[in-house]
Image (cartoon, rainbow over all chains, first blue to last red; front, side, top):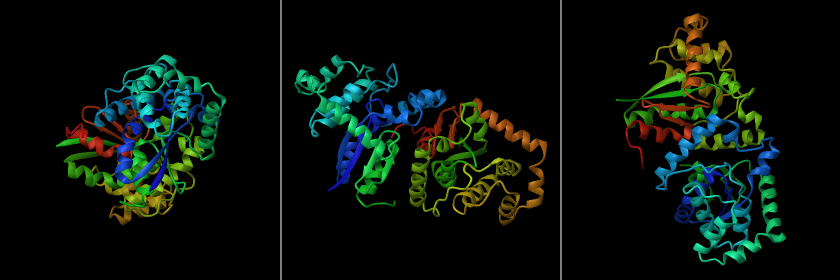
Length: 201
Length: 201
């Protein structure tokens, strides 16, 4: 079965849209997704940006909110809300996702995204993350304790460094087994085509 | 019949892809496209950028070339080439497009884009533009002479200012009659849906 890496940042708006639709499309295409949360912040910094491009270029940021509202509606998602502040601090959510098993990570990630972009909840807050964990049947306190462990912190740092090494500069980013990159929610279908050898349409 | 503005810059790579596929899709949707060339340069400058974002962020620029190669192939276009230097100076091509009639503009625009992005020709060169005009059956000398007239120069300046006033920050950009904006080649289908009232799918 073909595999594909799905790189995402919990603060990333278009990663949200991709996360909410990736799994059924991948299953239909016969592709196994590997969910790889990472931090865009250090990568933006390495390109000389101290915040999201949507803040650096406000006219683009305003347009993107409208674009996201329309796309969320087309996907059948709840009304899109940009969290305040934007981008959210995604450190705790990312560590939590990595503290969970590979099997539990997608469902937790979708829950974080929905809380953030449809309910406007603060995903940097331990109460929010604990609540989401509990609702999904996890032992919230045990998982939150794990996010303070050095192995989990190191894992997130290593994943972020790996993303940078692979030339990832934004999220979501899909990487096929042969190393081909597809950037953006708009490229999900094309990435799945590539991963399964259907490279032209 | 629904109308839609198609704003494009001759130096813009993704405008090329949109220009090569927009007309048949618009016709099928029952939408009349109004082809509106403008200059992105002054708009980038107003946002503090002195060149294309693909040059400011080289890692994004390198990815975009690969993305364009793949998309050109999927569209059945010749192999994609980034012109040197990039972005090309699109002043002469834009003035020429505006000197032509509304009816002649789309065909001429597609010819410019193909020369630029598949043959690597210099679209700032009068010889190149004259050759393209002649091949399309225009009186090349007469049209080129028109590009030096103040009314044509003023028209391009006015169109570029209008684009800025409408909040356009990149190209291609599709604008529906109700003022709704859709940025990027990836949004062409959605823009046509919007223009014809099919706003969710």
